[in-house]
Length: 357
Image (tube, rainbow, N blue to C red; front, side, top):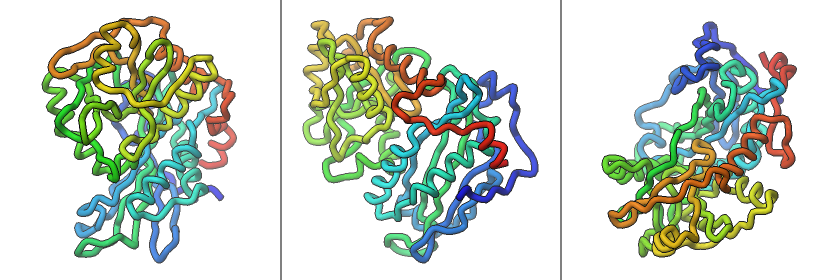
């Protein structure tokens, strides 16, 4: 059953600014919210965007029981709006929640909150290409209690805002040999807030040296590639798309999984295996590695132009119609076009918009 809607009494929407791409980093008019207590979810609703009441002793503020997802809704060529891979994001959200000792969110609540919010704030979805309404489902422990414990009360919310591409040029990334993003047995595979906070300082240092992002390596030897910044990473090695295998230190990216499936459909071989820093250095220099790119919800498919390894920047060749561009086009055809051979898009039609509002 759709969530009840309490419409905002005033809108901040500037439709022309949304269309032109000038309206970014601005929350849409509404948000979805539900409360968990006494072992059940209740009071699910869509309401005006506003600050949330949070006691200073809320456990999530002190012990980081906070999990989030990143999703997007796209305005398609037929006028409808499509949300990309709701089911897959829901699965990953619950995996993260389990790791953080937090109650799972039922699919019906997750989907109704996301799809209902998009329907209510449909005017905030910008036109393509590459533009979207960014969706941020998240959950925080809201129980007011002193002392370390697993919380018994939580808030699940979905907020949204117009989004434009993060990167307009090939990325410069630095192989990180000192700091660690995730260690075996930790929370690296979960989208929990602490993972991202811990990455900020080494990323800031890399950016001060002129890099866009970090290429993380394994915690034990710093010799094997894992992720790049907030994205998974892929390489084209001798014509094959190679990406590190999923472990408990690597996030199971929805874009990563989708890119592997699309590549196979396009007849491009794919392999999930470890890639060492030495192989990366030698492969770029010898020409066996022709492309490197990040894949993630925010970045989509982001080509990498150079990689800094132990103080030496190694440039990758410019491949105008390479694998990265083929994948980027395929994603755009699915997200913005009318063809969805994989069944990944949940369509929010004009009728569902009218019924919601």
